[in-house]
Length: 338
Image (cartoon, rainbow, N blue to C red; front, side, top):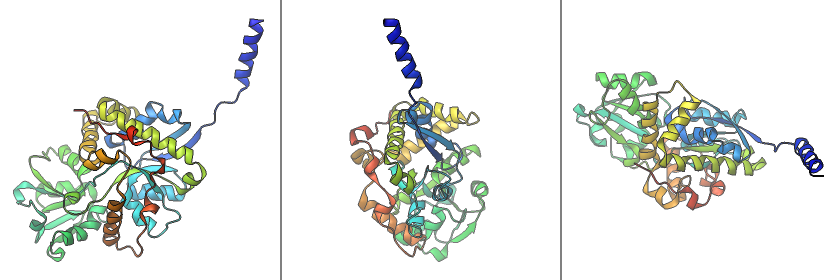
């Protein structure tokens, strides 16, 4: 009798269909970097799978590409800059993805100068030459940065440079300052045998009036409408990984190397920690938790982006960010280990 029951149970188990998983195509913001660790750890440790998700992750080509890839329907979700969402939401509000997990609480936009130049404040930029890649947020928002800090923009010479030339020209003294992302330029300088802390000054936009948000997890409007449970699961898995990495840094960089075995472990560990210490952790995150943002601050940020990009319309905060998929606050506490 027992053998018959076991045999019947086995047949039922074999006949039962496997639980269907939701496929999600996810684009990173750039080539594989340590700052992608929360997404990559969620995949490596099976957190997506536990949420019933089959997530395919591809490398990216910048935040603008993240937004357009999702808008085209090629990808369902991605990691990128909320300011790229603001820009597109002003023109195509029905197609633009929505930020559902705001990871970087501070922006990476900065002007970096050699210490020997004597440039330590925005006012010191008057009469100087700055270089940067055209179309980046740092370049686009420089006029707002100048206005907010009473700097005559007409007194600054702007040179458009290919991204790979910006730091070398700064090092050679061909330009006085570089308009860059700190999380990128910091490590480009290291790769050029420079000491970014000892030999350079950093005029971070966030410290000089441009209180902006930056990168996080965005999803398509179609995904929100058609499968909100999948959005909740995606956010929950990435948040779980982000909280874990704050305590277990090695796990984060292990996931990066598992995804891309050509990545430099020491460099990407340093980049991952830079993102946590300089872009993620903040007093605001301590108060409202990972993934969330302050609505009034977002509204001010939208106005700044609208000015810098000369947008014809200004999107509402609700078109840009949706917190309804966030886990409870107790699950989003950031405790960063030494």
